[in-house]
Image (cartoon, rainbow, N blue to C red; front, side):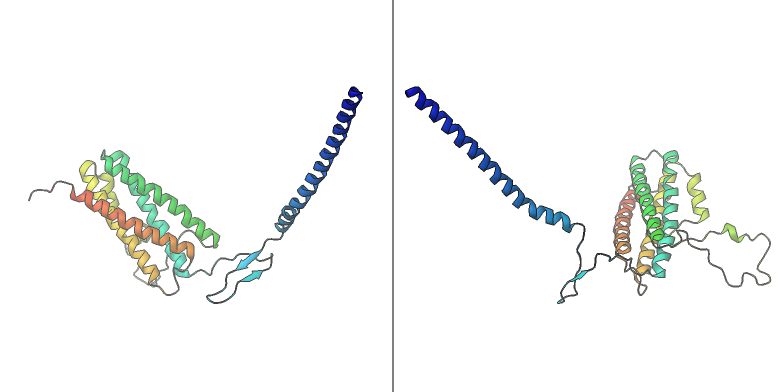
Length: 251
């Protein structure tokens, strides 16, 4: 009798356990389905991106249609001219730093040169991308000088193509030749003097850009030029300190 009772009790517990397990499974499935509904809704919403245009101060925002496409701000001719000129300007600085390795053992100058070479090479890449995105030439067109076809302009020994157009602060061919011929301490001093001049010219170009009405308003251009201005001012101070460290020549 007792054996029959225990067997019946175990059977009842087994039936109750199975029912409870099934009920738990159904409940879990129901909860999973309920929780998955917002996720599915969110995933469905991803196919229709919401584009919001911030309003002016005091004005509400606007929801734009999904077909809205971003457009670049209108470019200023002065912006394009600045970027083209600065590419040429930076290219000479990179050319100057390339002379350092074979002409001086000054470790501080080598470190400075590597820094200038890397930063200005990367900036050249940025400026070219900026111009290409706006379908503008990356090289500055040579200006057509008035009166070039006038009689008497073709004087003997005059080769206009050998006279490169220089941006503010750029070294003249004569200065570049002197730098190439120098070595050791002489090279160090010529390089530092020349690069200070060069950086000063870049600051003039930035000032000229912002002094022009309607120029320098592009966000990318503005950030770039302010970085150039602050970076080159800092490097000028470093180079001035390096020059002052050189022994003074006796009279």
